[in-house]
Image 1: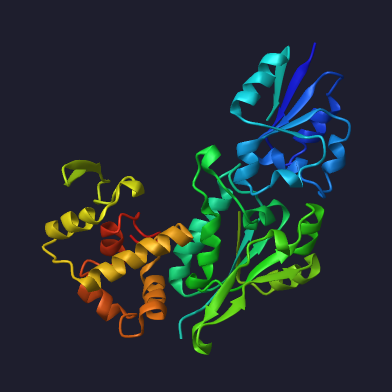
Image 2: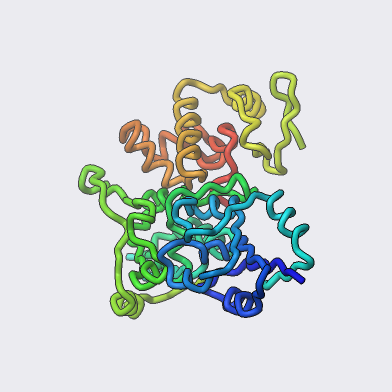
Length: 98
Length: 135
Length: 110
Protein backbone atom coordinates (compact mmCIF):
# COMPACT_ATOMS: atom_id res chain seq x y z
CA UNK A 1 0.00 0.00 0.00
CA UNK A 2 1.62 3.23 -1.13
CA UNK A 3 0.96 6.56 0.52
CA UNK A 4 1.26 10.14 -0.67
CA UNK A 5 2.48 12.18 2.29
CA UNK A 6 1.50 15.83 1.92
CA UNK A 7 3.31 18.39 4.07
CA UNK A 8 2.38 22.09 4.09
CA UNK A 9 4.27 23.54 7.09
CA UNK A 10 7.71 25.11 7.08
CA UNK A 11 10.26 22.55 8.28
CA UNK A 12 12.03 25.34 10.17
CA UNK A 13 8.95 26.19 12.19
CA UNK A 14 7.04 22.94 12.69
CA UNK A 15 7.98 19.29 13.02
CA UNK A 16 5.42 18.02 10.48
CA UNK A 17 8.11 17.13 7.96
CA UNK A 18 10.12 15.18 10.56
CA UNK A 19 7.07 13.16 11.51
CA UNK A 20 5.99 12.60 7.92
CA UNK A 21 9.45 11.44 6.89
CA UNK A 22 9.49 9.05 9.83
CA UNK A 23 6.43 7.34 8.41
CA UNK A 24 7.62 7.04 4.81
CA UNK A 25 7.93 3.49 3.48
CA UNK A 26 9.19 2.11 0.20
CA UNK A 27 7.00 3.25 -2.68
CA UNK A 28 5.68 6.32 -0.87
CA UNK A 29 6.03 9.87 -2.14
CA UNK A 30 6.40 13.09 -0.15
CA UNK A 31 4.64 16.09 -1.69
CA UNK A 32 5.69 19.48 -0.37
CA UNK A 33 3.18 22.33 -0.72
CA UNK A 34 2.77 25.85 0.71
CA UNK A 35 5.44 26.71 3.30
CA UNK A 36 6.83 23.16 3.21
CA UNK A 37 8.44 23.82 -0.18
CA UNK A 38 11.30 25.57 1.63
CA UNK A 39 12.47 22.10 2.68
CA UNK A 40 13.47 21.31 -0.89
CA UNK A 41 15.81 24.28 -1.29
CA UNK A 42 19.47 23.42 -1.66
CA UNK A 43 21.77 24.56 1.12
CA UNK A 44 19.19 24.60 3.87
CA UNK A 45 19.91 22.76 7.10
CA UNK A 46 16.85 20.52 6.70
CA UNK A 47 17.68 19.41 3.15
CA UNK A 48 19.32 16.18 4.34
CA UNK A 49 16.01 15.01 5.79
CA UNK A 50 14.80 14.31 2.27
CA UNK A 51 17.81 12.17 1.31
CA UNK A 52 16.80 9.02 -0.54
CA UNK A 53 13.10 9.87 -0.61
CA UNK A 54 10.81 10.33 -3.60
CA UNK A 55 9.94 14.01 -3.27
CA UNK A 56 7.70 16.30 -5.33
CA UNK A 57 7.02 20.00 -4.82
CA UNK A 58 4.17 22.14 -6.08
CA UNK A 59 5.52 24.58 -8.68
CA UNK A 60 3.16 27.46 -7.99
CA UNK A 61 4.12 27.45 -4.30
CA UNK A 62 7.80 27.50 -5.27
CA UNK A 63 7.27 30.44 -7.60
CA UNK A 64 5.26 32.38 -5.03
CA UNK A 65 8.20 32.10 -2.65
CA UNK A 66 10.80 33.04 -5.20
CA UNK A 67 12.56 29.67 -5.22
CA UNK A 68 13.97 29.00 -8.69
CA UNK A 69 13.88 25.38 -9.81
CA UNK A 70 17.67 25.29 -10.11
CA UNK A 71 17.82 25.95 -6.37
CA UNK A 72 16.15 22.63 -5.59
CA UNK A 73 17.86 19.59 -4.17
CA UNK A 74 18.80 17.13 -6.94
CA UNK A 75 16.13 14.59 -7.71
CA UNK A 76 13.16 16.61 -6.49
CA UNK A 77 10.32 16.77 -9.04
CA UNK A 78 8.24 19.86 -9.64
CA UNK A 79 4.53 19.25 -10.28
CA UNK A 80 1.62 21.52 -11.20
CA UNK A 81 -1.92 21.12 -9.88
CA UNK A 82 -2.75 18.35 -12.34
CA UNK A 83 0.49 16.59 -11.37
CA UNK A 84 -0.74 16.86 -7.78
CA UNK A 85 -3.95 15.09 -8.80
CA UNK A 86 -1.96 12.43 -10.68
CA UNK A 87 0.04 11.72 -7.53
CA UNK A 88 -3.10 11.36 -5.44
CA UNK A 89 -4.47 8.99 -8.05
CA UNK A 90 -1.28 6.96 -8.32
CA UNK A 91 -1.10 6.18 -4.61
CA UNK A 92 -3.41 3.96 -2.62
CA UNK A 93 -4.00 6.62 -0.02
CA UNK A 94 -3.10 10.14 1.00
CA UNK A 95 -1.93 11.43 4.35
CA UNK A 96 -1.95 15.19 4.99
CA UNK A 97 0.43 16.07 7.79
CA UNK A 98 -1.19 19.39 8.70
CA UNK B 1 8.43 67.57 21.26
CA UNK B 2 6.07 64.65 20.92
CA UNK B 3 6.86 61.48 22.79
CA UNK B 4 8.63 59.40 20.17
CA UNK B 5 8.76 55.73 21.01
CA UNK B 6 11.09 53.14 19.59
CA UNK B 7 8.93 50.47 18.00
CA UNK B 8 10.19 47.24 16.55
CA UNK B 9 8.16 44.81 14.48
CA UNK B 10 9.56 41.29 14.83
CA UNK B 11 8.75 39.04 11.88
CA UNK B 12 9.25 35.28 12.23
CA UNK B 13 6.88 33.71 9.69
CA UNK B 14 7.17 32.86 6.01
CA UNK B 15 4.89 34.76 3.63
CA UNK B 16 1.70 33.29 2.05
CA UNK B 17 1.40 30.09 4.12
CA UNK B 18 -0.07 32.10 6.96
CA UNK B 19 -1.44 35.64 7.17
CA UNK B 20 1.15 36.94 9.68
CA UNK B 21 3.59 38.49 7.19
CA UNK B 22 0.90 40.47 5.40
CA UNK B 23 -0.77 41.55 8.65
CA UNK B 24 2.55 42.79 9.97
CA UNK B 25 3.25 44.77 6.83
CA UNK B 26 -0.16 46.42 6.97
CA UNK B 27 0.32 47.39 10.60
CA UNK B 28 3.73 48.83 9.77
CA UNK B 29 2.27 50.92 6.95
CA UNK B 30 -0.60 52.19 9.07
CA UNK B 31 1.65 52.80 12.07
CA UNK B 32 4.10 54.77 9.95
CA UNK B 33 1.65 57.68 10.04
CA UNK B 34 2.32 58.21 13.73
CA UNK B 35 5.86 59.57 13.55
CA UNK B 36 7.44 56.96 15.75
CA UNK B 37 10.93 55.50 15.51
CA UNK B 38 10.17 52.28 13.65
CA UNK B 39 12.45 49.39 12.83
CA UNK B 40 11.80 45.89 11.53
CA UNK B 41 13.50 42.63 12.41
CA UNK B 42 13.38 39.49 10.30
CA UNK B 43 14.43 36.21 11.84
CA UNK B 44 13.55 32.51 11.66
CA UNK B 45 11.20 31.97 8.69
CA UNK B 46 10.61 35.73 8.59
CA UNK B 47 13.72 36.10 6.43
CA UNK B 48 11.78 34.41 3.62
CA UNK B 49 9.53 37.47 3.41
CA UNK B 50 12.35 39.47 1.87
CA UNK B 51 13.47 37.03 -0.81
CA UNK B 52 13.68 38.14 -4.43
CA UNK B 53 11.71 36.80 -7.35
CA UNK B 54 8.39 36.01 -5.67
CA UNK B 55 5.62 35.42 -8.19
CA UNK B 56 2.17 34.58 -6.87
CA UNK B 57 -0.03 34.25 -9.97
CA UNK B 58 -0.15 30.48 -9.50
CA UNK B 59 -1.52 30.60 -5.96
CA UNK B 60 -4.03 33.41 -6.45
CA UNK B 61 -2.69 35.66 -3.71
CA UNK B 62 -1.46 39.24 -3.79
CA UNK B 63 2.29 39.41 -4.26
CA UNK B 64 3.13 41.86 -1.49
CA UNK B 65 6.89 41.50 -1.76
CA UNK B 66 7.15 44.70 -3.82
CA UNK B 67 5.79 46.69 -0.88
CA UNK B 68 8.96 46.11 1.15
CA UNK B 69 10.79 48.38 -1.27
CA UNK B 70 8.30 51.17 -0.49
CA UNK B 71 9.14 51.05 3.23
CA UNK B 72 11.86 53.67 2.74
CA UNK B 73 9.15 56.11 1.59
CA UNK B 74 7.36 55.36 4.85
CA UNK B 75 10.50 56.33 6.75
CA UNK B 76 11.26 52.80 7.78
CA UNK B 77 14.98 52.85 7.25
CA UNK B 78 16.30 50.13 9.54
CA UNK B 79 15.58 46.54 8.62
CA UNK B 80 17.50 44.03 10.69
CA UNK B 81 18.05 40.57 9.22
CA UNK B 82 19.40 37.86 11.46
CA UNK B 83 22.50 36.13 10.11
CA UNK B 84 21.92 32.77 11.80
CA UNK B 85 18.42 32.50 10.29
CA UNK B 86 19.73 33.15 6.79
CA UNK B 87 22.53 30.62 7.16
CA UNK B 88 20.27 27.90 8.52
CA UNK B 89 18.16 28.26 5.38
CA UNK B 90 21.07 28.30 2.95
CA UNK B 91 20.42 31.94 2.08
CA UNK B 92 22.70 34.95 1.74
CA UNK B 93 21.97 38.65 1.46
CA UNK B 94 22.11 38.21 -2.33
CA UNK B 95 18.94 36.15 -2.13
CA UNK B 96 17.10 39.07 -0.56
CA UNK B 97 15.73 42.17 -2.23
CA UNK B 98 18.00 45.18 -2.22
CA UNK B 99 16.10 47.57 0.03
CA UNK B 100 17.11 51.20 0.23
CA UNK B 101 15.82 54.51 1.46
CA UNK B 102 16.52 58.00 0.20
CA UNK B 103 17.81 60.64 2.56
CA UNK B 104 15.93 63.84 1.83
CA UNK B 105 18.45 65.80 3.92
CA UNK B 106 21.30 64.65 1.70
CA UNK B 107 19.77 65.38 -1.68
CA UNK B 108 17.96 62.04 -1.79
CA UNK B 109 21.15 60.03 -1.38
CA UNK B 110 20.32 56.34 -1.54
CA UNK B 111 21.19 54.38 1.59
CA UNK B 112 20.98 50.73 2.56
CA UNK B 113 18.02 49.72 4.71
CA UNK B 114 19.04 46.15 5.48
CA UNK B 115 21.45 45.53 8.32
CA UNK B 116 22.79 42.03 8.68
CA UNK B 117 23.20 41.28 12.38
CA UNK B 118 23.93 38.19 14.41
CA UNK B 119 21.64 37.06 17.19
CA UNK B 120 23.66 38.77 19.92
CA UNK B 121 23.64 42.07 18.05
CA UNK B 122 19.93 41.80 17.40
CA UNK B 123 19.38 41.08 21.09
CA UNK B 124 21.19 44.33 21.87
CA UNK B 125 19.01 46.27 19.44
CA UNK B 126 15.90 44.72 20.98
CA UNK B 127 16.95 45.65 24.47
CA UNK B 128 16.85 49.30 23.42
CA UNK B 129 13.26 49.24 22.14
CA UNK B 130 10.26 50.67 23.97
CA UNK B 131 7.73 48.36 22.34
CA UNK B 132 8.00 45.21 20.24
CA UNK B 133 5.28 43.68 18.12
CA UNK B 134 5.62 40.04 17.19
CA UNK B 135 4.22 38.51 14.03
CA UNK C 1 -22.63 49.33 -6.75
CA UNK C 2 -21.29 50.31 -10.14
CA UNK C 3 -20.47 53.26 -12.37
CA UNK C 4 -21.03 53.71 -16.08
CA UNK C 5 -17.89 54.40 -18.08
CA UNK C 6 -18.01 54.51 -21.88
CA UNK C 7 -20.99 52.23 -21.96
CA UNK C 8 -19.48 49.72 -19.56
CA UNK C 9 -20.70 49.06 -16.07
CA UNK C 10 -17.77 48.87 -13.62
CA UNK C 11 -18.12 47.56 -10.10
CA UNK C 12 -17.15 49.89 -7.23
CA UNK C 13 -17.15 49.42 -3.46
CA UNK C 14 -19.36 51.33 -1.03
CA UNK C 15 -16.88 54.21 -0.95
CA UNK C 16 -16.69 54.45 -4.70
CA UNK C 17 -13.33 52.77 -5.28
CA UNK C 18 -13.03 50.45 -8.28
CA UNK C 19 -13.45 46.83 -7.26
CA UNK C 20 -11.03 45.67 -9.95
CA UNK C 21 -7.86 47.60 -10.62
CA UNK C 22 -7.75 46.18 -14.14
CA UNK C 23 -11.09 47.85 -14.99
CA UNK C 24 -9.41 51.23 -15.01
CA UNK C 25 -9.27 53.48 -18.05
CA UNK C 26 -8.90 57.26 -18.17
CA UNK C 27 -12.69 57.57 -18.55
CA UNK C 28 -13.03 56.30 -14.97
CA UNK C 29 -11.36 59.45 -13.64
CA UNK C 30 -13.51 61.59 -15.94
CA UNK C 31 -16.74 60.04 -14.69
CA UNK C 32 -15.74 60.14 -11.03
CA UNK C 33 -14.55 63.75 -11.18
CA UNK C 34 -17.74 64.83 -12.90
CA UNK C 35 -19.70 63.37 -9.99
CA UNK C 36 -17.54 65.49 -7.66
CA UNK C 37 -18.04 68.63 -9.80
CA UNK C 38 -14.33 68.76 -10.45
CA UNK C 39 -12.80 69.48 -13.81
CA UNK C 40 -9.62 67.51 -14.41
CA UNK C 41 -6.64 69.50 -15.65
CA UNK C 42 -3.19 68.34 -16.69
CA UNK C 43 -2.08 68.96 -13.11
CA UNK C 44 -4.66 66.47 -11.88
CA UNK C 45 -3.62 63.93 -14.48
CA UNK C 46 0.00 64.32 -13.50
CA UNK C 47 -0.86 63.15 -9.99
CA UNK C 48 -3.24 60.43 -11.15
CA UNK C 49 -0.62 59.02 -13.50
CA UNK C 50 2.01 59.32 -10.80
CA UNK C 51 -0.17 57.24 -8.47
CA UNK C 52 -0.72 54.59 -11.08
CA UNK C 53 3.02 54.29 -11.68
CA UNK C 54 3.65 54.16 -7.95
CA UNK C 55 1.15 51.34 -7.57
CA UNK C 56 2.61 49.48 -10.54
CA UNK C 57 6.03 49.52 -8.90
CA UNK C 58 5.18 49.05 -5.22
CA UNK C 59 1.73 47.40 -5.29
CA UNK C 60 0.47 49.90 -2.77
CA UNK C 61 -1.56 53.12 -2.72
CA UNK C 62 0.74 55.49 -0.82
CA UNK C 63 -0.37 57.33 2.31
CA UNK C 64 -0.78 61.09 1.84
CA UNK C 65 2.50 62.10 3.34
CA UNK C 66 4.33 59.44 1.38
CA UNK C 67 2.65 60.68 -1.78
CA UNK C 68 3.56 64.26 -0.92
CA UNK C 69 7.20 63.40 -0.44
CA UNK C 70 7.39 61.24 -3.54
CA UNK C 71 5.72 63.89 -5.68
CA UNK C 72 8.18 66.45 -4.32
CA UNK C 73 11.04 64.29 -5.38
CA UNK C 74 9.70 63.51 -8.84
CA UNK C 75 7.90 66.72 -9.77
CA UNK C 76 9.56 69.32 -7.58
CA UNK C 77 8.99 71.02 -4.23
CA UNK C 78 6.33 73.38 -5.58
CA UNK C 79 4.12 70.35 -6.18
CA UNK C 80 5.30 68.14 -3.34
CA UNK C 81 3.38 69.92 -0.60
CA UNK C 82 -0.03 69.35 0.87
CA UNK C 83 -1.36 72.80 -0.05
CA UNK C 84 -0.85 72.14 -3.76
CA UNK C 85 -2.23 68.61 -3.57
CA UNK C 86 -5.28 69.56 -1.50
CA UNK C 87 -6.08 72.38 -3.90
CA UNK C 88 -6.15 69.86 -6.72
CA UNK C 89 -8.01 67.20 -4.74
CA UNK C 90 -10.07 68.91 -2.04
CA UNK C 91 -11.40 65.60 -0.66
CA UNK C 92 -7.84 64.60 0.12
CA UNK C 93 -5.14 63.68 -2.38
CA UNK C 94 -4.79 60.20 -0.92
CA UNK C 95 -8.43 59.27 -1.07
CA UNK C 96 -9.71 61.24 -4.02
CA UNK C 97 -6.77 60.89 -6.38
CA UNK C 98 -6.38 57.20 -5.61
CA UNK C 99 -10.05 56.70 -6.34
CA UNK C 100 -9.73 58.45 -9.71
CA UNK C 101 -6.60 56.39 -10.44
CA UNK C 102 -8.49 53.16 -9.81
CA UNK C 103 -6.36 52.23 -6.80
CA UNK C 104 -7.61 50.91 -3.48
CA UNK C 105 -8.01 53.36 -0.62
CA UNK C 106 -4.55 54.08 0.80
CA UNK C 107 -3.61 51.80 3.66
CA UNK C 108 -4.03 53.72 6.88
CA UNK C 109 -6.56 56.20 5.51
CA UNK C 110 -9.73 56.22 7.58
